[in-house]
Length: 134
Length: 134
Image (cartoon, rainbow over all chains, first blue to last red; front, top):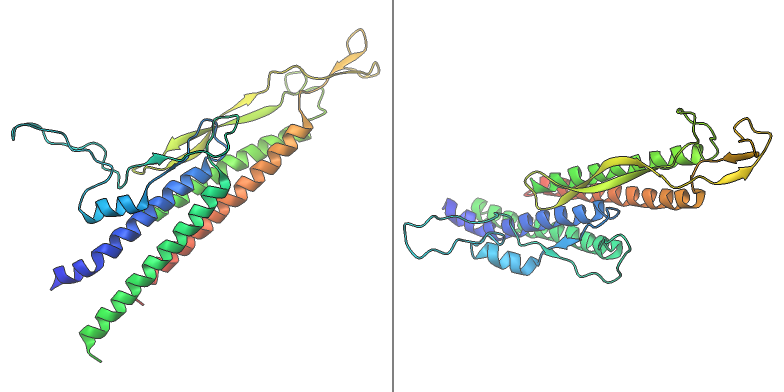
């Protein structure tokens, strides 16, 4: 019973945690808008979500092993693979943060996060009414 | 809770930008200070930003690495009545470029506003998360 409840929420939970993570990365870009040689970063949200749903951690790379006795391990356990943003207008100090792009992405990501919360709230309400039967 | 990290990143950026604004205020106030604490003309101060990794997060924050003094030569004016004049009557003024400092000020204040807005958005998202299931 509890695992069914968990299954019902796990997708939205992964969406929210990835959105929160992306919010953090974008905030880092905005904070470093004046840092020389800083390169703006972001990740491919749909690919990261696909990885998360499939149970893979996007940032980790498993070691290739040819024997069961080989060491097991993975690289970095970041939730998503961070990429570098393509720059449209280069600046003299080597910084690739384009404030318009970052602001737009930040606002969009915030709305998507709120949308995720709305969906989750709806699901909670639906389950509550199913449990109470009133 | 990774949205809390957004507060750390944006808060660090606010500190860094206000340090920059402080340096601008100091430079503008001393644009005509012929004699500073060491007896020589005042030298313009510039802050150096550095991207810094956040604990347990992929995103990078920002901090002021150090404050450097501008080593460019000061402008020289002819004023034989000044007590700081040399035997030919020339006075070495501070090397503060008022135009550069004004540009610096506008840039710092815009970045400060943006990061304050980032904090506001993060606060909204967290409050929205708290209302989940109500």
